[in-house]
Length: 85
Image (cartoon, rainbow, N blue to C red):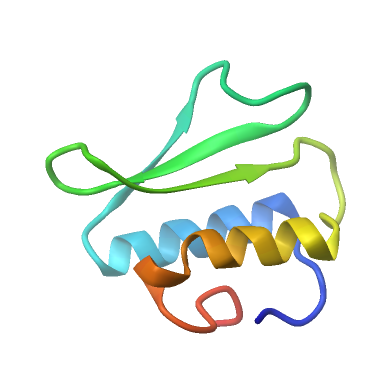
């Protein structure tokens, strides 16, 4: 599991990097998050959703619970320790 916390920007950057490596794309779902939160999906070449995470919309670090939840949500897709790479 990831050590420490990450900002939403850091998590999104890592998701995009790992998605590119696998030939996948990342898109934000419009109007799907609650409040300042946003939902991001990872899509395969056919446009099928293969992963989903929720990110906070505020500046600064996300809580450790949210950071670990994001890592766990895409663990099967990107592999162990993907957020630390």
